[in-house]
Length: 158
Image (cartoon, rainbow, N blue to C red):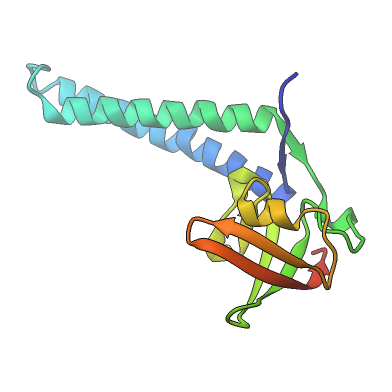
């Protein structure tokens, strides 16, 4: 059985856009760079050629990775979700019990996680601690920086 990759529609669209960019812009640009470097002669000592081949390998690897994720995508429409129990797609407001700092996180699929944008992966330690909890509950998360305790003050579906 192939594991599904949960993601929001926005995350799926972003992956499709990246795939198109890599296939229609990056791939031809890299092929052109390889051809240009090849025209300079001896390939064994041609740094431009080796750099272009490495870029090609990286790009093709990323294309394969994106195609795999899109093939296994399980698109979840967050707007149709509701309830007060935290699950995939929930936007959760937390208060750090030590610092009283407020943080807001949306639980999303791994491909679209971006801490700077307030989105954490369903597989992250914090998301795993939050799943199944409700507003008012306290959770303790063991993170690389040590254990942190949070109070859940709000569960939203956006």
